[in-house]
Length: 123
Image (cartoon, rainbow, N blue to C red):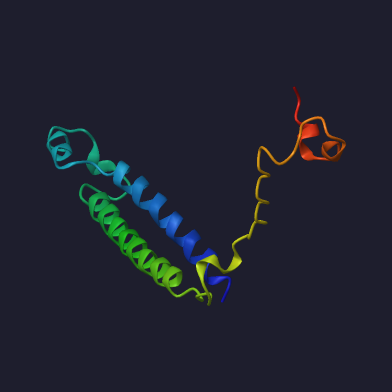
């Protein structure tokens, strides 16, 4: 089952690239006017109107594949197993800070203060 998501994703990307390429290759409706004046469209591989039908049908098929893979990817993403528990269950708990000492309780020059944390503060 774990190979399904990458397979559908690859098909989806290839269908998207194919649709983009086929849309860029197709001629607009105004291009038919040039064919009437001898632009050589009748000598093409698919004939005068064969290329338009082939490209249109291929584009429609690739668009349908793109649509189906889009729905499949949405379905696969929505049916992932849900984890139980709270969002905060795995949160890191920090240690509570010790209460700061009262300013008047310790004297700055006393020997009892020589091992305190205030010694580490640069002056």
